[in-house]
Image (cartoon, rainbow, N blue to C red):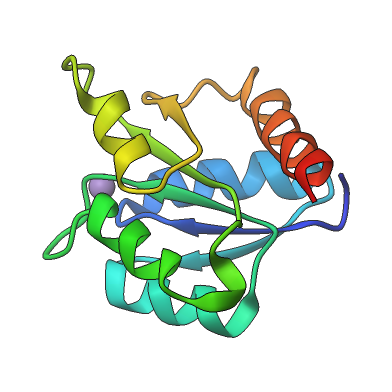
Length: 128
Ligand code: MN
């Protein structure tokens, strides 16, 4: 999975730094955006292999950002993984309804993150 490009849309710089550190050490190339509109632009420009989507973003939440990304023809099938601390029932369903492929719960567990990412990537490879 090394060399794959991951777009992380997240407004919290500490989370971005943490995930960047862990995933670049695994050989991934990180692309980052700190809000929804720039995230949609970055997705369109970079056509990443996978998108990590913070749900709690300012102005436009991650569900809406995911819906917008799904409208980009080249990105209808890119894996989008929702990341949220919300554990309320229905969040999982809501993220799937918005077009997310999976769900990683915050706080981020750096010991399992690489395995979660590679699972989502290999699943999408089998689909293609
Ligand atoms: Mn956030």
